[in-house]
Amino acid sequence: MVSTGMKPAPLGSAYRMQPHGNESASTADGGHHTISRPTPAEFRKLVSGPQENIIRAMDISPPAFEEFKKILREQAVMVLDCDRFLHEQAPHTWAIYMDWAREELVSFLSTYTDAWPVELYIEHYLSKKTYSKRHAFKAKMTRLRPALKTVRVKSSASERGVSLLPTPGGPPPPYEEHDFVQPEAAAGSDELTVESFLKTVNPDLSHLLPAFEEVGICSEADLVVVRSWAPAVRKDFFERELAGRMSAFQIQALNVKLGEMN
Image (cartoon, rainbow, N blue to C red; front, side):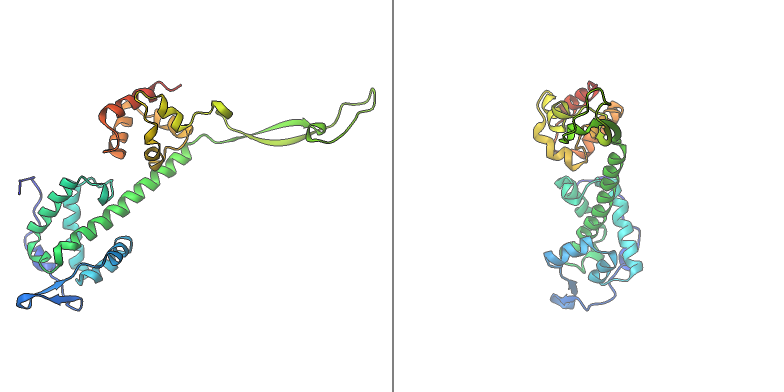
């Protein structure tokens, strides 16, 4: 294994984290007990459920689990991108992390088939952290969208299909007040959509519309918010949130176009 400067597990931690029961264990050669990997359906439930379920599946005590997850999280911050789901991690980076875990926790993980608790807990941890951050970002984008203004205008009763003929020399037809919701931005065919904006970028980035919607950029109001950021902040955001989906050239072209928005 190539040295990556990774932080080793605390001395004696593997001993303190040894499972305390064997109800869910299967006996291997030599009488050694190993706990099999959960089925795919069970695995998904454990990922999305509370950590108490993971503790039961691993068959260890809560204090031992707390030490286990502390070791994994400290190393994850150093090696993985903790703002992304597990399936979004670079494969070679995840392989390096798993190699580290198998080496540093070799005694503890020997109790489990294929070191599955590492994958289970890290996927659980990254899923909760990433979802929470992205949900907060989308909520913030929604709050920053320009509010709709209510404009009161007057229209004649005749414009609403009511036949009302004034008497000669009499007063004009009565007017009634109605509420109309009118956005600040121009409406109709002149309204800028995210797709039409992406088409104006050179090169055309309209094929990336689904990716923009995934990170919460769904309207002209969202584009205005992103445009208000400093160029360096925009660049960092797109590199982090759309890594692997946009090249450095495309990000630069997009950043320039955002800066040209009126």
